[in-house]
Image (cartoon, rainbow, N blue to C red; front, side):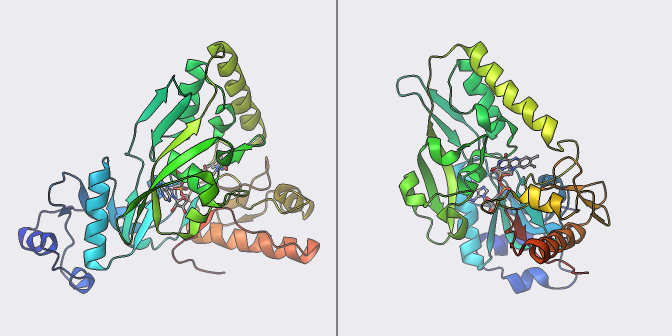
Length: 333
Ligand SMILES: Cc1cc2nc3c(=O)[nH]c(=O)nc-3n(C[C@H](O)[C@H](O)[C@H](O)COP(=O)(O)OP(=O)(O)OC[C@H]3O[C@@H](n4cnc5c(N)ncnc54)[C@H](O)[C@@H]3O)c2cc1C
């Protein structure tokens, strides 16, 4: 990939005159866009495979990873002016992105980081891109309880709030105080409470909205012995490493658990453990994980998801709803 400097084009783009059609003209190399008043670039054709835990997916047509809220706002302004669609990614740990990549502007929040622990209130405020695992360990180091369960979830704060991520009978909805969001369409900011997010199992109404999480505040309980909280955190991690395939690329649980059975149990009872399409496999260690055994394509993973859904529905008359967010185009068998 060449990010060549192309002054005439940059001039057009920075004036907001360049159109999507102009970008697509043959022999017209795409160049990075320098946003006015910001040192954050919008880069063309950035591979997304390395930015997802599945290690699959084609390039983003345009990509930016702002550190600052102002840079994020400038990127959104550019997208609005150009009429370019926006896709948000955090740590990419719950995403399956198609092999042909994503059109429009992909914004990755993982460089937006800070965490502030307030001993007066017992609340921690963290930026959208802060890794949840790091936050859990920082809380443990201080002897603050309430995030021990989150230590095995390899996402960002933003992704976790949107997904209502959870484990060990706890979830984000239990500890969230409020969340700052920014509208993609209007650029307006709001502060929302958990009540306004319509939280339920691995769901929030942020999943079908144009709102970007920029930061969130959580209520924890300070005052415990750090050794105690660290031991509980470590125990959660060990338990997960013993039961889940952390050694191969995956997105964690592929399907939501339908009531009353667990998705993993239904898949296992259907005889699908170890079933493979290309280099994508239903994990031996946990049947609700589909792993990339090395060199899998996004389409192979997608086909395996569909195959598992079909077989489970045939056997149990239960439709397994994907928890993983599936973005882009996929080849079916
Ligand atoms: C090994 C492994 C284990 C896992 N275990 C668990 C588990 O125990 N429990 C669990 O709940 N999940 C688990 N997951 C799934 C995943 O880690 C969580 O869903 C996590 O919360 C996703 O966060 P992320 O930053 O990676 O979001 P991404 O995967 O990047 O995005 C997920 C969704 O959130 C949106 N999004 C991300 N950031 C923002 C933002 N700032 N504003 C608005 N929208 C945003 C994206 O558009 C997308 O729709 C696991 C994944 C792996 C790979």
